[in-house]
Length: 576
Image (cartoon, rainbow, N blue to C red; front, side):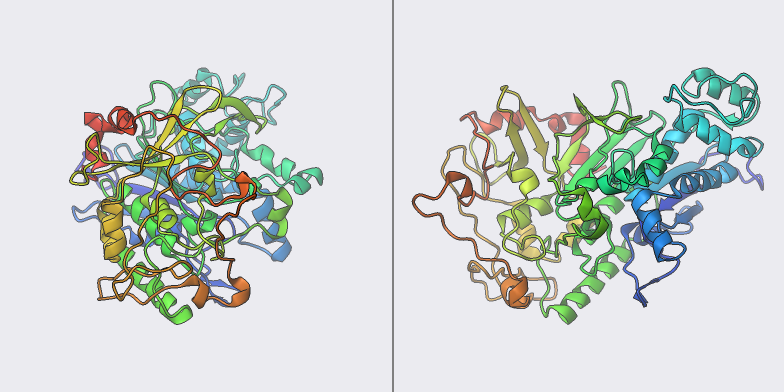
């Protein structure tokens, strides 16, 4: 327990305040969508997994905020979701909850998905700038919020020049927050225990759709987000983000965090297979969402008391869905990846995501700069490797999974050390070498934490592959990777993806080419023929198509990777 003098009741016990901001068009309080039960997002599910009172008697109070575009008629919901109308209201409402209920010693948690992730990050940025307003100061919140979001706008003229105090400087000036504190309007230096988000989209939180901008609809609303940037404030102790590797909507560009020099925040950002709502939840097939939920619950376990069994209840529900809809349980990481490049969002075009290669964004204009993001602490989840190397189904279950966001630039490396002995643990990472320099960029594979391991062990053969994958070679020769054994303990053939055994015995055989209608099946991969353009040839499952690598020893990289430092080993090994 932490003593916090002055709390109501005089008990001296702190509490945990958790703000949970859902994604666009998501509202767990409604519970229905198109007349049927709606599929909950990971924000809804993790909120339900948080115990009301921890084992040691600490209150854990969850304030759930529905996503944008969930109120009004069909047109109102469409405009709200596509333009971000109401985003400022969401930020102020959640901020007010914290300001009204916070007492010294309390712990603050901000959770979010999609636009809700932007809301959570914006609240964190607002607290970093002006602290938490007192009850007296909350009367001035609308004007203070306007001042902060326009602090970098040289043309800004406040509506009320004497609110919150006369002759106020720009909110970018430290004197602004200091004067708020001197007048008893705010409390500065408020720590945020954790911000945990799924796939923050848009450089400023709002997916940019060209046609809506040309019509003048979106730009007007996006001005409300200009105070935001990707840097982490030192008031944030921990920051975790799950990112969607296969989201292809250009308007859904991810907002990747970076750590400024001297920042002390513990930052982890992990890429998962799948599209935006695969990772954040909301589709019928929730397997990938369950995997990212297990990761996030594992990150939060040291700080929040969670009901671990909730995760496995959700996995059981997804298995029932598989048996009902497909007649077979899919292997771990083989959940269906959806393609949402349609409707209004198709107007924004498509693009591949770029792990480890994003640049900073001007927080006022929203335009990307040439400066690469620094200290992003990005990792690739093992589910990407298993789905790719074990030839899982592609987008919409068509063809094989290619992980183009990685394999067009990166090479997968599985290294067992100088002797290449599988007796030890493998170092797994993705490596890119820039064409114009000798610089090497490495994205390590993230470890599996306790809850993740328990979930993956429900598929023993795939779990064995995760722990002991075949080593990659440093030569240019291609390598075939054996899949896990099928239910009859024989290797599966091309076109039929065999399912490893489960905890219940043997899983049913899963084959996307036999399970789905003919019109939904992708073509079988064909071998290249003489005379076929080299760029069109099938790629190795362990090598990028468009990048050449020198014959440097991978073990040199293995021993110099940042996470091998002593202080990082506990996290890397899934320990505390």
